Length: 182
Image 1 (cartoon, rainbow, N blue to C red):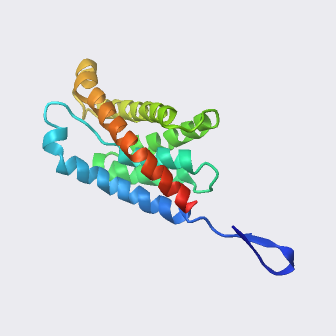
Image 2: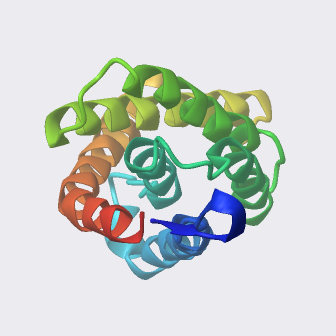
């Protein structure tokens, strides 16, 4: 890790995660839109499912790169602004929600051991927080017209199931990726 330089000082090699994290964030952002577009007949037929891959990448980076200085909160703010502009059209919902989730996760992950079960439960809570904030923002802007019951049955439930499946499938490969690059 460290290499010797003159006069006894050591210089730490910069982490390769500084390059992996933003590339993965952009890929997750683009894949999220592509999956939504490609599978829209399936994902938005009767039940509406939203794949939150960008959120998943932020949560996993917060979990697996705890000791790295990646400035995940700032990246969450930046990708939240881009997410709002590109997907929603109203700046503010995800710009606020993504950094909030990163902040909450930093606190929670200090007290919780990292494993698939606890991480997936925390991620489900994160999806719920982002989903509710998004719904409230849409209601305030008069974009959403679903009642609370319809929202729970036709959108929130399927969204949680889809994101849990994606999280379980991607958990170990992404953990291995972060371990390899750290």
